[in-house]
Image (cartoon, rainbow, N blue to C red; front, side, top):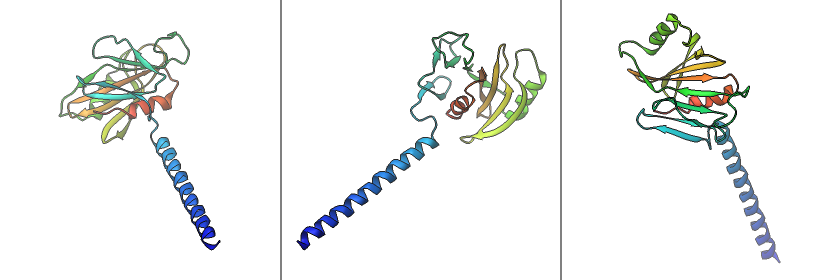
Length: 180
């Protein structure tokens, strides 16, 4: 009888330990998923331009304007007049002089102005040890969102233009997923 009680107690303790381990592992998985908002997203890789970007599985690629252009939209094949349509455009890698830092270079371009050029305030930040500049308006015609300049190297940068103003958090997560 005593051995039976000891075995039952041992089994109960082991089950309790197993339950605690399962709860801890599940909690860690939930926390990691919340810390990585692009988990499970698709990845677009452009080997010739040397970058990749993640986008939600419900979004898709639109036929590009030219070979270096990338267009990602929340309405990849649907009605292009939807009110909440958002298009993220990456027209390819741009170049600049290594003597000019990205902030000065972009500030000069924005100051020059123009009808279809990016405009507004510039906010500098860092993303995966890369310098990023966010401008209020990406330019173009129609409803434009922000634009992002991401420094690839001292002589190269990527510009991401956002057309549409919905899905701001999704767009920020997409931009933060850029890798060179």
